[in-house]
Amino acid sequence: MDLSTSDGGSWRIGTNAETAWIADGTSAGLTIVSAIPPVFDRYATIVVPEDDDAAWEALDRALVSVLRVESANPRWWLGYLDNGVDDIVFPEAPRVTLYADWHYVLVEAGPEQALSWRKLTWRQRRSLPDLIFPTDRCWLVSRLFDDDWICVGGPAGLVHELVRHPDLETRRVELGQDATPPGCIAM
Image 1 (cartoon, rainbow, N blue to C red):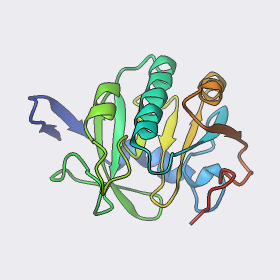
Image 2: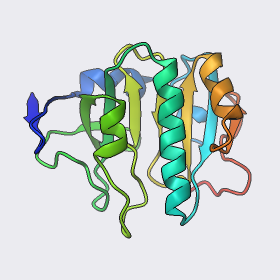
Image 3: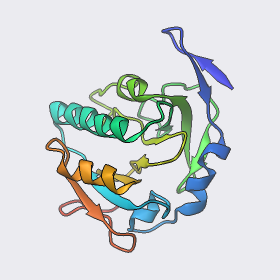
């Protein structure tokens, strides 16, 4: 199924087939596997800033710039969680189901759309999609509904670049380790 945007673009809407690898590889808990399947070389968490729009925008730009360099594939799946508050970009689109029976609109697009389709508002504290991965699945970024951090899985080089980026508060985590960043509370 394809849907159009007001700018004239046409975008493919994803199905559960595109996210089955995530659904089959994740399980509830406090480890990184609650958001990221155990199929990657390295894992990390990135702390989301509190109420600072400039810090949010810096995080968005920094994260997408690192992801863009680490992905030879310009086509990404962007997942927008239908939580009743945040913009899901395509409200008429069918949903995929992941994690704790949460529903996402999944759209095949790219880095520019990840940065521009959803804007921060006083009610919405998420601007990037809640789920991002390239069509070749070489990495995965996921922010679960209740978490104040973003989970990442991917190649060692990607995690290394995220950890060293000055605009990202990133820490590497291991598969069996509690993924909750210091100072954050798991819900």
